[in-house]
Length: 329
Image (cartoon, rainbow, N blue to C red; front, side):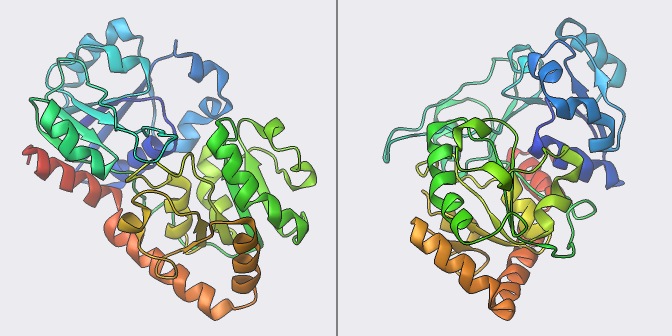
C-alpha cells in the first residue's frame, strides 16, 4: 500500500513514518508545506531527513493536487493541526491527533469536523469515536499514537530521572510543578535531566536541571536513557489520550511516572501494572525515591510496560486496526 501523508512532522508523525518505511508492505511519502510558519520557526525541521530517515517532499498547498496525481497513493492521510487540513482532498483519511484540552472535568467534548472531501476520519481519542460517528457521515476509527520497534528499543540506563515536554499551557506548567519541581529538592542535576522545547521561562526553578534541546531523532535515546521518565500532562481532563514521549519511554523499557487523568488507566493500566502514577508533589518524591532504590520492582514494571506498548501500540498494528475498522482493508 502506498501512503501519502500531508503532515507537519511532530513526534507522532515521525514515529508513524519511521514504522511505515521499514514495513515492506507499505511505501510512505511524507509531504510538508514549506510555507508553514512552524516549519521555519522550529529547529527540528532543519533535521527532517535525519529524523525520519526518508526524503521529504516539500509542496505548497496549491500544488498538492498535482502531487497526488503524480504519486497516485492508495490512501492520502491529511493530518489536522497543519495548513493542509483545510485542503479539499477527495477520498482522504483525516487524522485528528491533538487533544481536546479540556480544562474542566466533565466539560463536553467538541467535534472538529473535517473538510467535506474526507472519506474517513480517525481520532487518537478512543472516547471520541462514538461522538464523531454520530456527527459524521463517513467511517470513524480509533487511530492513536504508537511506537516503532526499530527506532524505539531498550537503552542503557545512565540517568536516574528524565522529563521532557513543552511548558506553555497553564495545565502543563502546573503538572511540571507538581511532578518534576519537587524532585529538584532531592535529586542533583546529574540525576535529573529536564528537556523543555518551549516555555522554559515558565519554570523558574529549572536552572541547572535544564538540558540542551534535543533533536527529534534523539528522542528515544533521551527518554530511554532514564531509569524513570516523568511525564507531565497537558490537562487532567483530556480523556483517552496518552503522550508520545511516554509511549517512547515505555518502548525503551523505561519506567514511566505520570499523574492520573480521565481515562488513562483504560489506556495503559492501573498503578504498578505497566507504569506508576503520582497525584501530589509528596507522592512524586516518594515514588521516585522508592523505585530508584528498588531496582527489581522498577525493572519489572518497566518490562511489563515495554511488552504492553510493543504489543498494543506498534504503529503497524495500530494503523492496520484502523484500516479494518474503516473498511479500507
